[in-house]
Image (tube, rainbow, N blue to C red):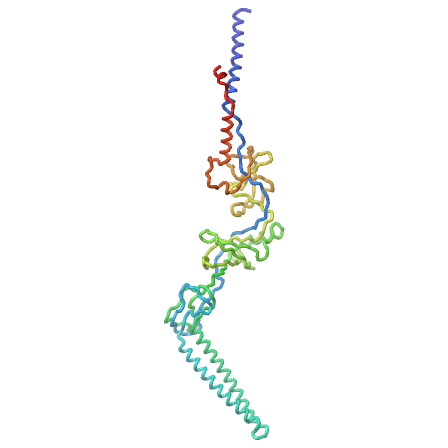
Length: 425
């Protein structure tokens, strides 16, 4: 072999060795640059456990006074005085108006005199019968005269009864001249003033009294919901809360919860043809007079109990055009998308009727960091208090992301550095 051929062969071998050495150096450099492998993202999960839950329906309602009395004039005359203060609380029997009593007093006096006259005639007729009785027994007077005396006595007794009835009527009319409150409650504005002529031909309205403590709330529930509830109770899916145990809470027009709980009194037996709703009535204490007749409210009514209810936090449910779904973590630590049916809200949770079972792990926090098929590290969710605490999150991705960042930084700091001598070589 010539010297030229040997030189070319040696050059090729040296080039191959240098290439191999350069490739090894590049791989080591790349491995050093990438650092240790990233750990799987951390997500907070809740483990599904069925529990007993009261099925609550939100129903619209109107406030109604427990008792309403229309104060009217039962005696005809001129109003002399209004005694009460408009908008104040009155008690049964309190004087409200005074109507001119003069004509009624005169009528009463006349009937009193007529009664006295009838009683005097009765006394005279009675004495006459007493005198005639022994005389008719000795035939001193005829039987006819004695019978006439007895008849006269009975007639005068009837006159006395008539006079008493007339006096009673006159006394009632005289009493009606003083208008009193039929019930206790709050009285509204006066509908007449002093000097008005009332009670002529009809009972003139004078004022209205409403009893608002306790107060009624009339609720409307669709017949469809009632049928659905009855079927669920009949099938055993739900159980009844018990007679007289249905709890009712109110939310007023300004969106605030009413402090006093109420009780359900009854449910109407008929359905309103115009609205297709059934009326229910609840009673609430109203000591501060916050609830006023005619006010619109929303009521939370617990009508049944679901002994195996499945609930998830509202933030765990994802809603889109295809419906509702949640993200689960399976036994292998993989993320799985699961469609659910969550149509009923209960506070800050959704009641899931389909799609979940006991033991499923639902992702509550960290949904933005994962997708189906990804491997994650599941930790227990500590509830709203943990996520809404006073301390701000350490990063935009939340505490789990901050912990992962610290772990990566610590691993990078502890990674072995290339030897300076080797590097110089």
